[in-house]
Length: 311
Image (cartoon, rainbow, N blue to C red; front, side, top):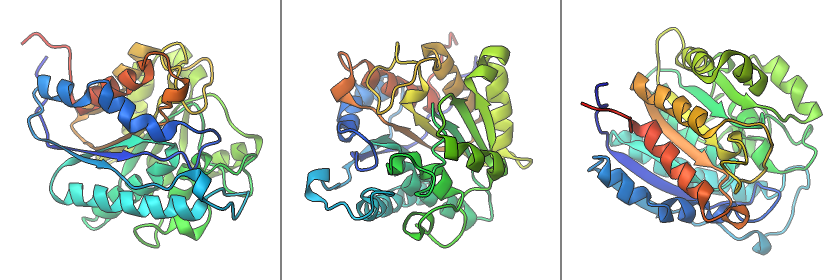
């Protein structure tokens, strides 16, 4: 197997738990770094890695709840704007931005920046969204008001302007270039949103029946579109079964195995069209000996091109 070329990488920490229903994901970026992210990147031959550190995110206790249907939305939107600026800067310099979270609402910032970057080049961005959940609620359909259940809807143009218009007043993603992988837990109101959106959904049932490799081939084809365009992967670690990832924001039994998760990332890396990646919802408060932080670190390596090779 030919070794994939090393690419310049920019790491950005998004230590945010404002969109989640419980505390702890704000410590996710530290857990991934402590698992040996920098050391492992160096060992695997990534000799151009910069770490921009963590964004400044307010603590939830310092905020006043304005809207219970979209909790802490102003602070989340402000954080996503700061993240978008960092991601956009990395892309302009020809680097691969890796966002470490933090809850999944951070993806509004990262993907908005990537979409705007490629829109300026008249290219369409595709996204593979690996998650136990659909993340396609709006304030009207959400049962909790937690914004980490709304990012994909926002990127498809649904929801408050504060999060749909980051990086410009355009829909960041076309639904026909969105592939959700590993879905197994949906809110009732969210189901209709997903059905009517036009996004492609690959549930855990389908993965069980067809196998992860077959599903990922379809997901890559969906995200890349007919022109084999750039692909962003947004990986919520709760897409992995809690046996392998106990420290996540919202655990759901019956997820991807350790090797299924890695194969998914390895297959995207092999396309050499991965432009950016999020790995989010790592919650050290709920973890066991940083197993989830280490898994997240390893998944980042697989996405960037780490391979099992002999030549």
